[in-house]
Image: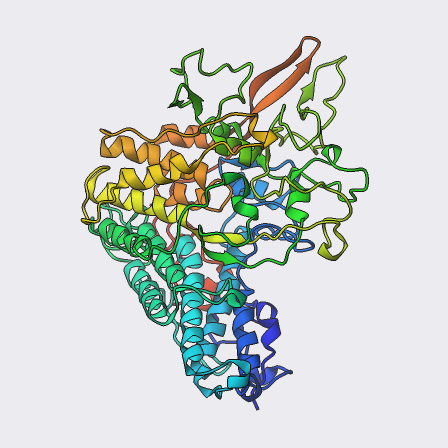
Length: 618
């Protein structure tokens, strides 16, 4: 008799897939719990099985006691391993990664976790697709053949999603269409990048044919046709990017695809298909975008239980009510590298902060005025106006001067005194417990957007620019790259009656006409960095664009700076200080290393370039 506990997928599939004798695979015969016949003999149990595959998706925003969604045991976002952010915790695993202390024997914690979890979920998907036709119809429980086909589409999407998560890290992958058993040998080699991308795209296309444009309200959060098409567009965009589509290395291999400039057009066409659904639009109010559970911008979300812990992690204890019991906060801090990318607005024009910025536009002695509205949504800084509290005071005190009153207790030198609040609900007075939603005085209904329309528009803009240029209507739909980026850019308006936006009105002006392809690329990359900050895009964007091949970029992106408020007898001044010098080896660190345990177990695997002596570095 074969057994399986459907509610333990994340645990029982935790070991990785690529074992020579299959011994790391979960075999149903070794388990206790429901039999396969019981699981797929009941519509209720089969649906719970599928729901638990959804549960393997990483929450990203930390929920209650679920620490370290990316870094086990630590309450930080992936962004702390990019030039956008730092964290002040000492001896943390991401500091080791930033210092270059990682390899195939000790891969980054998030990468190893993604490898294991994704293969576990892919196996569960294969199991579901193998057995779902055995589930009898049950009209009482709302399960008929039409629902069966929709659930198949959801599972195909989830399989594509988990494949895409490891594709962007590792490249070409083994392509598995059955759930391996203990008796099966696992010696499948890695397929090429092009073959892997084709496989994911085919899964997305098959899913889109089965999925509805939207589900009933009670099924909100399930994969839709738009989710399948948007994932396809993202994967094709990655596949067209320089890391995976390199004209200097045009052969098709597990490390890159065959070079083809037409890949950009395919990515643009895929994004167009989502736009043409006319199902999605940009949420008009940037201030509550990430705490509005249902809104027209969300394409696919990670459903989270209502809670408040992410807000507790963001807002300092000194700006909370006395009954607040959670002192921890401020781990995800914003670097000056990112802060200076938020443009300054003056007289309807936007200015980049650099040596050429007019002095009447940007005053480094008062640096946080008239900035891109998204700056005030994303960052809490010295002088920030939070709810009814007095302006926040953060920074370093000179000798003889009192410490700023709202400082947290930082451990060591990794501190910028500007904090990420992008996922905080700024409307809720913080009191009670945040870690346990059942004991919180108030909660916010917050999901995490894995796919949202703003990203889709930026994907479209990038692909259109590379395929045709900024203002060429190459697909004949009247929507150019410039149109798409300006949709996102001009949505960024100052909301009314929000104290944290300092009473400003208006918003971001559009990018001008007449830009070259190269100039538009630069501006698009900045726009993407700002709009998608702290949403797990920067880490992969700098890699797929191969930005660090430029020695100037390598120098500035590995030197992490903070804009530090320094309090003296005459008030506060701001100093640009180096927080951390990081290491990035362009010969190998664009791709994650295949975990060495998998290399040892499957002798047909090829390691990514630079991570062992058998594969030449880039």
